Amino acid sequence: MPLHLKRLLMLGVLIVLLFLLLKHLLTPVSFGQFGHYRGKAIDEIAAHQVKFVGNKACVSCHDTIVTMKNEGYHSDLSCEGCHGAAYLHVDHPKLEKLFKPDSREFCGKCHSINKARPEKAVTQQNIKDHHPEDKCIKCHNPHQP
Amino acid sequence: MTEKKTSLSRRNFFKNAGIAAGTLVAATTLPAFDAVLYAAVKRNPKGPWYGIAIDIEKCIGCGTCAKTCKIENDVPQEPFFFRSWVEQYTILKDGSIKVISPNGGIDGFTQSTSADDIEKTFFVPKMCNHCAKSPCVQVCPVGATFETEEGIVLIDEKYCIGCKYCVQACPYGCRYFHPDKHVVDKCTLCFHRVKKGLNPACMDNCPTKARISGDLNDPESAISKFIRTRNVYVLKPHLNTGSKLYYNALNQEVR
Image 1 (cartoon, rainbow over the protein chains, first blue to last red):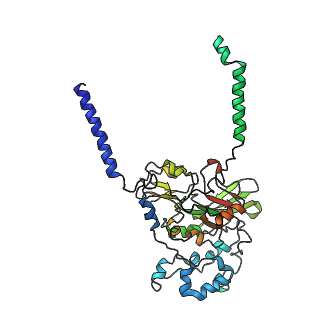
Image 2: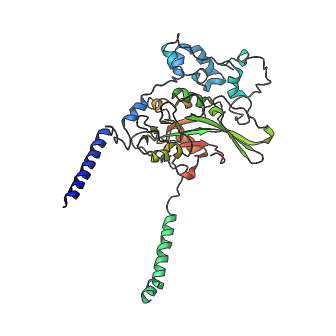
């Protein structure tokens, strides 16, 4: 074999070896554990913080009001659906206060008249005409409407 | 000339016609392909196989799902970035269709069209379909997005190179490019909650319980019963993505 071809061949082998070395060093250890992805990513995503803690956590302090809610039309509602995520509040109840919605617009997100809302699913009211000067919660207890 | 005559002989013609007819008859005995329920059968022998069901007849368009999703998953608050959102379809009497989704439905919907012009109107909550044959997973050049054994499509944000090819590939528009992380982001079906035995945040906080998720492997699960008893449909079944987001009472106009 001529010398120039030998040199070219050696260079080719060197490039392939370098590629294999880099691939070995750069591919994460867990890549290919379950499929064509980094297996460790599953645990990383599963470790994210849960922010909506659920009604059960609310009951432990606010049992009267949760019971009241569960007996009324709003029984299917989660507390945090209106009040916001409570993950900080459960750890620091005095420091981290939750949102207390009281605007007409907030109630209107579910209860304003819209032909697209199924009539059976929710009571609807024309919020522009129905006592426009007052807040809804003046007459309707949101926990027992 | 003689050879050519032989290949077109009567004997060969009957032979080929017989093979073709036999294949056709055999093909008719195969079960019909069902693009809607393609992914609703047992797929994960080791554990659960997750699917989602949304009942359009129950959705009141309050946008709580979209709002809670943003909080639970640190989705940027400004519009255009959504893992979960609600659209309002309005089909007018003149046949035209109007689709709106102001801030993904988070601030609620106001009907701007006169009630007299409306033929039909309804809300369609949307989110990742967690397809069993995800186009987004197929196009990822680095293996940063994948389907888990439980049938949940996830993104490895440490491995994503931000090429956005998957954003274009998703036929349902369920992916967005995260403006701060510079990687693609999407619904994980609240993987971190599901793994702890909780429901996804959007489902726990839905006031009318219009959305459920669960194990399609278990014939007694709420979602399996939902699929059996309702007239369910998936979005764009002709694309054969193996979508696992089943809608009850989905209008054919919905895209």
